[in-house]
Image (cartoon, rainbow, N blue to C red; front, side, top):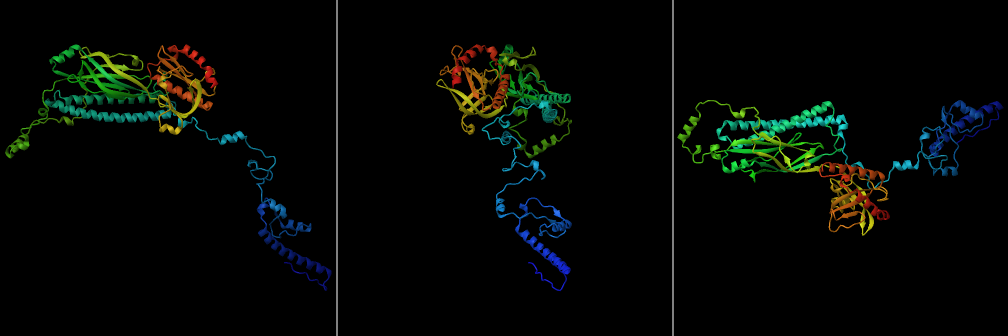
Length: 591
């Protein structure tokens, strides 16, 4: 809204000019205020680029004198307004992408490339972005599918913590065995103080418990001292000659001791007034495992002492030594019956007496007599009365022997030096791995490759069609690794199979009636053995290397605890294998 200018006739020309300039200035200020209000409501300065610089009054007046736009505000500091956009240009900005204006904007060098901007390129290659976002794979040989043994002796901190934990556990076991020794000693002290328990089974049982607790306590304390010494020296037990991560267990059964012929005749004649008790202790480090106690009265069968126990010794190192010790005890035959020994009277009892006789009996019992110390209150610990009459040592080398013998048997002992027992070694193979593999099979003389889900666990390699079938059904195909005769599982030679990432190994088993010569089977009717070649293909080179490595470690563990294993170089089958390879070369490659 603008005020009208009324001309003045009676004033001179100079006054007219001054008045016109004043009115014009007022009108311009009002116009500027209205224009600014309208511009704030209609225009969006966010689309007009960066904020314009401020202009002072002096520069404003200079712009007016130079004939610039009269729409500039007269405030102390104002923002310069850009030229309004045309309608066509305004509609073009409805569809736009972020605009990068030069290198002066902050962080312009870190901004990504925008489509439509010239001279814009990728910061990295396409392969780099693909590696950042890997595609999902069916199965990879990740850490969760294979458990590898970690050498704890390489880290001194872990070693120290393990030693301290073992020492605490052993000390607790030693305290428990010491309490048992005290209890057994109190029971034996009571039996010794009473003539009724001379040669009784109660006393012999107390001696057996004392023997067991004494040796368990001694073994625990000896192991504590060994661990303290090794911890102070900062080293572990030397294990240079054993395979890495190889632990095993041994089962001992059928322990039989042969008795002397003269002793058997003496017992059969009834001239022997003594009873001989025998018990065996199997000792390894802090493990002490006793057998059942047998006597010469009811434990002899065909001139032998047969212990029916099955003993399992676990967590064995490769260079283990198990000590089997035989202990014996001789006592007189028990004469008193159970009722006499415990003063049990069935015909006369205190409760059947008349009141007068009962009173007299109580008065007699109150009479003062010599005081004896109660043997139960004694805190002395007795030494076991059982004596060692023989011992032997069990190791991997001695397991190959068919006959065993006792050492340091006293001449007056009723035992012979012959010892019979059954030993079975087991590898505590904790290697486990899962994944997809492609297995080669022979179908009527033609090769066929089938993709299967595979599980390596324990001593076997099992195959299913799908991963979910592992917990639902039995394996479709299984390979017993104990029967493997290949020294080292590695990449299949090109003359055997030209497929990439294929590894091979062979197993040997007794010949069956339906065995036939084929691409993967070699039947030897003369020796009665059939050798089967297994061709397995992995998806990638890394998977093939991982499978070969874990299979080799599993085979090392199994063979370390198999005394009958012979390397393939000693079996004399290398010539047969070479001819077997050349005969099956063409068929496998063509498939």
